[in-house]
Image (spheres, rainbow, N blue to C red):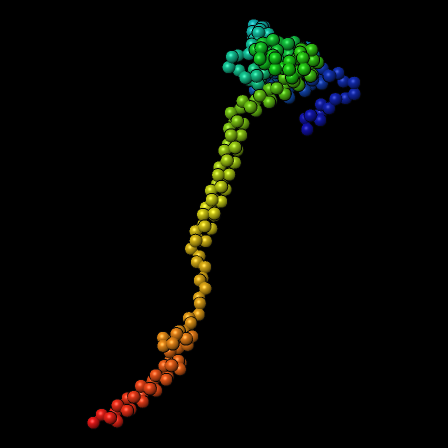
Amino acid sequence: MTLYAFCPARDVPNDVIKLMMFPYSLKGTAGVWYDKEPPNSILTWEDLLNKFVNQFFPPLKTTHLKNEISGFTERFEDTFGEAWERFKEMLKACPHHRFTELTQIDTFYNGLNENDQDSLNAAADGNLLSKTTREALQIIENKSKVLYSRNNPNVSRMNTTSRENASKTDDRINKLADKHSTLVDIVSKKVVTPATIKAVEESCVTCGGNHAYYNCDATNSNQSSVCAAMGTYNQVAP
């Protein structure tokens, strides 16, 4: 609700709006400092800037921070992305540095090693510093994001883990397929195809014919002869 009270009226200068909104952006020590300022001691945006800078960025500190920015150099252990992030942190640490964007790009580029300079020039199809400020910044940001994803341990670990998981899944599938094939072979070997059972053909022991011996005519004839002979024998015997 407080913000509605500061909605700009027509033709109100931006500096006046910024001066009215500034107190609501402060926290901690900065808020305490502002509340302690005497009434009517800050009447313009320039007054506010001067007082704020002198309070939190005394001349000696400002000079030191600006010298750090101007003397930026990519460290040996820095990746390109790390160097770019470190340079941006330097700029944030000294918000009143007053370096133009063109000067910032030039300072950053000249502080890089030759490999990164060549890489930026290749991305710019020539010379990075010949591009517009917006184009040069976009090229730097794009290169930083690409290299960050390659060099970030978490991203690399995730990619490696994904590949390892995929490989493990393939191995499990292959092992299951092998087991299935082995089981099929085992079952196939254990299932015996029923042999064709042939009917038992009776063979006569007397004549060799295709019938039982007790159905053989020759057998019956022999039995009759035997019986007749036995009868004759009984009659002859005393």
